[in-house]
Image (tube, rainbow, N blue to C red; front, side, top):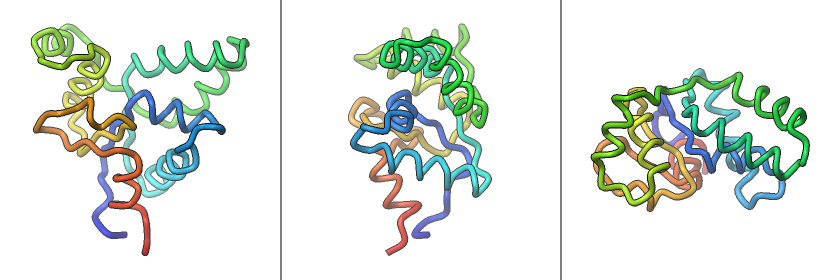
Length: 146
């Protein structure tokens, strides 16, 4: 590996969704990245909002809430949930993020003490602090062997 693999990683909503969507452009990269992180002992965090959003998207796509629940529980059971409480929401409301959901993801990840955030919309996290990588950048920086 090119660099030391982060031990605490936060996955944005879109990375988890693309990992589940076999037709998504970055499906294989998302799935492989998560698999390697888990096999190497990294702790992967997601927010409670991620679960809610992905449940909505998957159940809508499948038109079957029970099947969506089964799929999400299988994936999310391997992950840790970050906090989203009053303290996080205060930071969200006082932030200059244009997108409320992105702010929730960022401050929830920051609170969890992660080494980085992986997203497919890294441009939506324009701030110093927690390093943010697109899934492709993360894959090639930490997982790809040349």
